[in-house]
Image: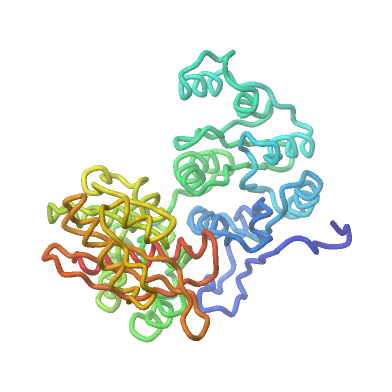
Length: 438
């Protein structure tokens, strides 16, 4: 890495003078606002494999507390790079939040890098060690060394409990700065921020409690489309702070007022009503915790109906997404996954015609019918093999089998490749099912 700049970093400056329509209000923050920076670790972010969603979530959550984010950057999983990022981050900021690199593998270097940077030693925390041993149902001395390493916490500072994983958050307290390290997976980081970090920051910096806010979760629309609709039909009052987060075809918008009063709650409730009046079809949840997967499961449960999956082009991603949602076991009664449609037909007891002239749509529709018969399910989603059209675009043929035995099919284009493409495909398929279930 160059020592003259940040050539290998992706730096995102968050300033109040942003020209974007999603910028925060123009008035400056209070003089007492705590300034902080975010350092997101992960070589996969710099390679473009994933987008940084942590910055949006953290800034959205901490701004109502009176904390001012003055910068965010992505840096590779190397100690030298992280330490250089930290030297920049602590300049003019009393709080630094680092995400990622707390796991059990060799490239999880955040713990040791922060130890060396701050000069604060690490030691095993007995409570964390006991929790880890209980999690794996072994005696503490039987824990693997890479797992036991995760029980080390700073001698000066504290730790943040992790309800969803093994890596606790670390808080290093120096004479001039606080550096917080959070786990990388969103399912671990987000609850830790809400349930542990907010409380710590209030005690450490005297920050105010979160004000009144509402969250609307959208699917099927981009951030710019939502923003334009708000401009055209629901102009926002100047004191309403708006933040948004985008990932995998899903968009969360949060609207906040600084004080949690009955009047402000009533104002936000009225605002929510006006927004849903224009965008209700694309809103799948009106809180921060209900996922699209949970929304679909609840709709199926309300109808007392079941779902089966027959996946080729989606590679099991639909089943994996639904598997983590509450109530899945009550509605998902079959998930059949194979690398080719021919193999999947064989698994389902059918027979694929080898004639290439056969319409691919009919083939995937037959997969849906076979899965419905095998699982005895009212609803089925079937995905065929990825193919290219005449223009070279990659698409997947998808079929929905409905409770009345009717089968509907369509082509769904794949954008990009790998996990991001599959994530967007899962979002689109679940949204199509959601709309059919309503």
